[in-house]
Each structure stands twice: as C-alpha cells, then as structure tokens.
Length: 259
Image (cartoon, rainbow, N blue to C red; front, side, top):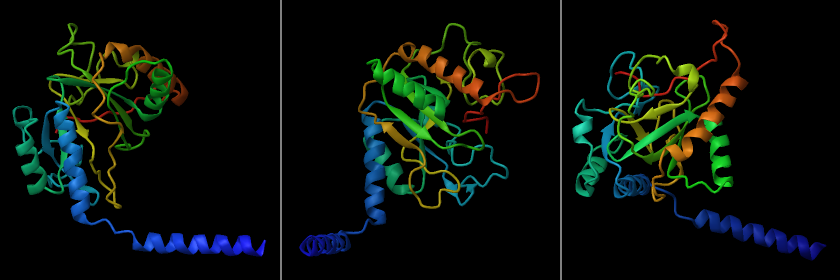
C-alpha cells in the first residue's frame, strides 16, 4: 500500500508540475480565438456586422436605459453593412476588439429562437430522431426567464402570412403569441448575436453566447424543426404556469427589441 501511495503522490506531483508549466492564455490568444470564430461564421455564409458590447452592467452605446445592452448593432445601416468578406471582418475584429457581432437574418439564414429549457428538450429529441439539425447557439437570460436557444436554419424569406410570425426587433406582442408561446422566427429585418459574445455583468470575460453546434453544420429547412420546437415551447409554457392575468401563459421576451 505504501508503494501505491508513493506512486500516486509522485504522479500527482508530476501533474502539478505539468500544470504549472502550461502556458497561460493571453489577450492575444483570446483575440485570435474570437477572430477564428467570427471568420468561421462568415465562411458558412452568414453575414456579420459589429454590435455593441458590455461596459460593466451597461452598454457601450451609452444610451441611458438601453433596452438591449450589448445586443444591438452599432450602425443603423447594419442590414447593408452586414458582410461575409473576410478582409472586412478581420479589420472589424482587430479595430474593435471589444465588439460583439450580429448576423442579419432573412438573407441566407433564419433563426428559430426559443426559451433555453424548451430548446434543450427539443434538441435532444431532434437528435434522437435523426433529424438534421444545423448550428445551434445558447444565450443566457436578458432578465428573468432562463435564457434562449437559437436554431440556425436556411431562410424562407418572408412567410406568406406575414402576421403569423413576429420579427424580433418589434417591441410588441403579436396576436398569435398564444398559438406559439415563446417561439420567435428571426427572418427578414431581424438579427441575432453570434458567438463569441459577452453580455452585461459577464465579469469573467468568457463568452456568454456560445455555440452548442458550430456553423460548420449545414443549414436545415426550418420546417423540419418547427413542429418539435412548437411542442417543446408549449410544454415549457404549461410548466411555467399562468402569470395571473387572465390565465394566459407567462411569456419570456426574446431580443432584439426596438432600439
């Protein structure tokens, strides 16, 4: 037994020595990783544009009461500014090392945006059933509600019935909210943050918006995911119960909202 303990202590000591010799990450390392992730998004054909970033618990835009701190583009021309050009993205990433980035939806891709708990349940079911799932990102809560999960899909442009889906930049509740509790379809005129992105209060500087499945996965048809996501959202809303106002389910607010 004594020999075993001695060997264990020797192994532990060598492990500790190895850990001490490991090179520490630097700001340059983090910057290189950020740039690689952004270029991978652009290489997948998803257009990018710079976004605001957190300054403590506030937003870099310095707008008092910013409704979506660190979650909105820095330019009102973000739709025309969005690009997949490698050189431009490298310049943005290097000249604006703190900036988050958004991707404009409705041109190449859409995003189905659901409550985090519902998204995790739906993702597990979709993978178990062998459904082709594309890139998936996870974001913490903008407030109470538990966060969001973003399913990236091929775009369908603008749905024939434009009243059926709510572009997430609109600061309102559509009449169809109760039919699709918690589900948002980012299509023409909307955008989402892409990893890596930091949000207010993210003091450890680790990305708060991160990939669960990276942009190397092909974009699926959104209709292949829609029914499962709707079911998961309905179950999630039922589990959360009523909000006490007429018995309607409590809804989590997706972002972005109108600036």
